Length: 146
Image (cartoon, rainbow, N blue to C red; front, side):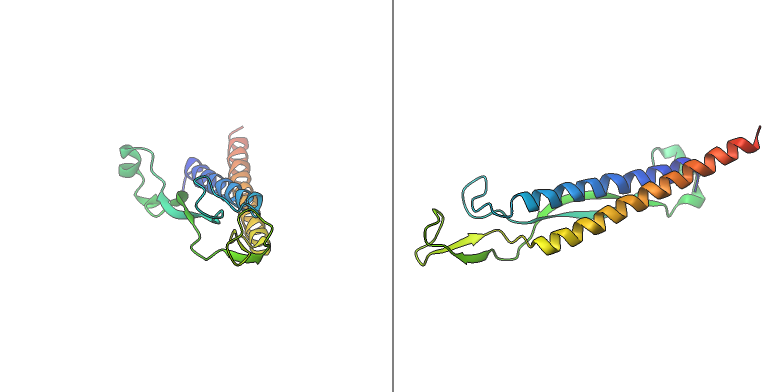
């Protein structure tokens, strides 16, 4: 793997984890939202769907880099809604309460979101470390030529 490939792979990881952190923060911010944008129900928790992405920039790279054939980064394919049902909370005075007095609250679990946030943060830090290691190796290689 060459220097630029390792930097691109780390950059895709940084981008994916940034989007994951943004999605998690959106979930936490909407944990009490009982009406979504179209007014049909409570906010539904969202998750980014990550997928492998081959690290190729041009047709020339494909032809010249046969050794790097298996290098893959990551990308966010889409943001999907969690299909778990909303939690029902008894609050008959709430404007969104049903006939029995229950309010459908978002399916956001703060503990789960915080665990996901820590995992995303650690992944982000790992990608930064990998990028810094590649940069340090490139700098050391340039020093050899002096």
